Image (cartoon, rainbow over all chains, first blue to last red):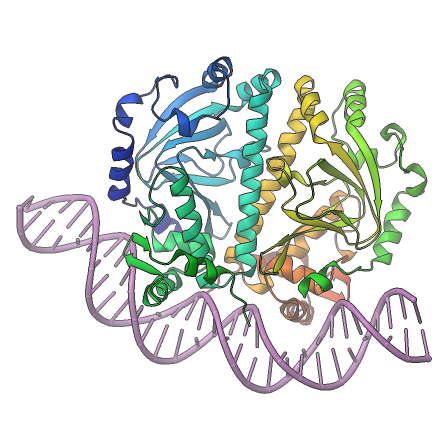
Length: 264
Length: 264
DNA sequence: CGTAAGCTTGACAAAGTTCAACGATTGTGG
DNA sequence: CCACAATCGTTGAACTTTGTCAAGCTTACG
């Protein structure tokens, strides 16, 4: 039941537009066999600090560029593990499924993020990865990455760092899920999102959510109605301006303070 | 406040006894400079499937064996990252701390588990790791592991697998924390523990908890009173026999069913 | 053997969920 | 291009679950 609503195509034209405004002709520089060297997304999508030789070795690992329409899956639970994915553009969610049909969003991924790491130790993916808007991903074949890492320490470091970042993020989520109340969760979520968008050159104070209230709720371990209520509450308190999916952080310090409130 | 109670020494003599019964003279075979080749714990503590040469290379990585008393820390938040730790014996918890003093248990580690992975991509550890009973750990210096992995594919695979296992576990915890109700969380916890103990050669149906109600609660995102109530409830329902920290799973199928109940 | 910590249980409070209705937004097909 | 349908978002009220506070009990350890 949730499966249907969650995996249904979501729409995010405004952010898409702003992305295209920031990186003109993104689409032109992609395409199924586009080499990375000339790609406009290179700074966000390839590990930094590589020499030219290392860069070439890295790009040689990329076997497939895939363009996804909103709602399409990068992979689904049980799909054979081919490799990890570099998100070039767009927004992708990962969803973990329980046997009884319940599901939970376990992560959101965007340009420069590495996707599918949780399958490295397994035969197949333990999650679904579904595009929340039209997206581009690159497949890095694991076999080849593994062999290459042998020879290029920087790549190995990159992989390890990615693995670790993933762990740290999930750990932070565990803490959020285990200790925070609804408004703290939502505030944390917004602050994180703001920071990640800022890192990527977008406004930190005004942005468009590319996910539904239901998806946010699933990620944060609360119901969509609670998400909505918290948004309303934070708006009334003057910390936020909410216009459906357009968010404006009015008082970021107060928002930060929301997270670290004493419960008593 | 929680910090004090959580890091306070816990007692687990019975399990300790059973561990020693299973692997006699464990203590004799350890010691600060003990080589792994002769160590009785080798099967649980070293990656399997290594050739003799690979095994030697692996053990050469181990720089320090450390013996911990109950309540001692392997590392604390902010400690410099030296490497990852292999748990040889004992039981260790990791605790994440929030700025305002709140904390949450993020994992439990025992013989054969790898500890401290979440620091690989960082300068220092983002968590505390504290012994819940007298424990032994081996430090694998990351610098050396990194260089060795270069030459030994199996080692690299081992590291990656460990990283991935960690991620998958944390992801599973996120799901638990995000979707399950209290009795489901406790049931899942017991089933996991049972399975992990069985894998290590202990009884799957009867075991001693080595952590307090408070620690279980922190791990599961619920309060200690709730843990206690659920134990009582499951006992009344005949699924469990609870005698303080001694647990006997009476009806494992019913316990499993508890987890996958429809909410409605 | 006493004391401190841990565990259990009850009564009450608070937070979040559920159910339901309505309003807003978006995308589609005439 | 407009109108309609479907999805999404908001809000209220009743209900459920879990948390909080408090007391008494058990266990372990010095």
